[in-house]
Length: 422
Image (cartoon, rainbow, N blue to C red; front, top):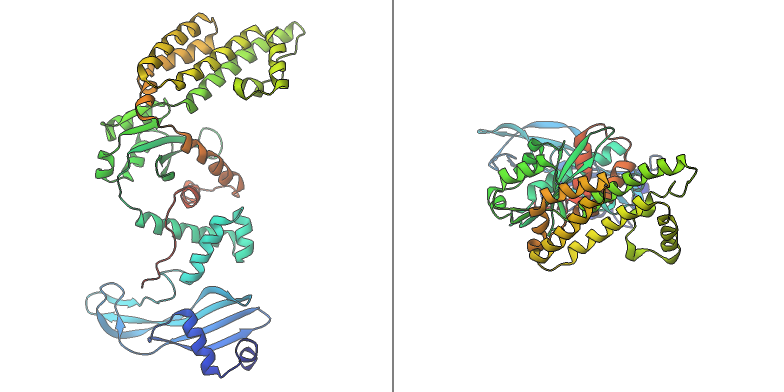
C-alpha cells in the first residue's frame, strides 16, 4: 500500500483515494476503499465499497432497501501508467416490492460486462482502427474470444441505437461464406454507405429477413434497389417494396460478360493447343482488362494474340462495346444502342456471349432503370474487400453469427460506444 503512494501520488492515502474516485467519476454512493499495487502481476486493483445509503431498483428505478450483497466482482479498466488496472467491488442487491431482489447498476460498467465503460469505449476504437484483430488483441492484452465479446456488445448497442431515418436506395448482394455453396446476403444503404443487415443464405426468405430490419415507414420510402439478376432477391423486392424500381448496374453485368469471354477463351484455347498453339494459355486476366486502361505492352500483346485467337478477340470486343451502354444520358438512347449491340452479340456465333445477351434482354427494364436512378452496387462491391479481409483474417468462423458480428462491426457505421449517461 505504502509503495503505491510513493510511486503514484506524493500525498496522503486519502488524497490518493480521492484522486482515483475523481478519475473513475464515482458519485456519492461509491468510495475508494483501497488501492493495491501488485508489482509481480504488473497491475493495480482499486477496491470500491458502497456508501450504504438507499438503493435504486435497476428495473423500475424506485427507491428501495438493501436485500444483501452479491459476491465480489472485478472489471478491467484503462491502464494506469502501463499498469493493468482492475476495479473490484461487492455490489449490493436491492429489494423492490414490485421487481423483487435485483443487483443494482454500477456507474462504471454496463450490465453483465467484465469491463468498465471507459475500457470498452477504448477497446472498440482500437479494434476498429487496428490493421487486424490480432494486432488489437495484442495491444489491449485481450484474448481473441474476449475481443469478439466486446465487438458483439458494441454491435448490439449500435443496432439498438440505429436511427429510423428514411432510406431511398438500397443495394442487395450475396457473399460467399465458408466452403462450398454457402452464402450470406447483405443489405446496404447506398447513400449512407453502410451495411444494414446480414443474413444467412441467399433465398427469397433470407431476403425477406433483410427487409425485416427496416421499419414499415422506411420500406415505404424505398425508391430503387440495386441488385443482381438472382430471381429470389427480385421476388422478395417486388413483395416487400413493390413501389421500388429494380436497377441492374454494370458491376454484375461486367462480371457476366467477363465470364462469357473466359469461357470462349478456354474453349478456343483447347482447340488451339491441339494444333500446337499456346498463345491463349495463361491469359485469363488479360481479357478482363478494359481497353482504355491498357498500357502499350498489354495492347500489343492483345493485338498479337488476336491474330490467332479470333473467337476470343471477338468476344472481348463485344464485351468492350457494351461498356458504351452506360455512357448514354437517357434510357431511350441506351435502348437503341442495346438493340444494335444485341443483334451483333446474337450473330457472333459464340454461345456463351449469346447466352449473356439473352439474359440481359430478359432483364432490360432493370438495365434501363439505371438511367432514371443512377444507382449502382459499387458501394456493396466496395465492402467486398473488407468482408474478404474479415473472412481471411478470422481463425475460421465457426458460425454465421460471428461472421455477421464482424461485418456489422466494421461496415455497419454503428454508434457502438457504451452509454456513460447512467
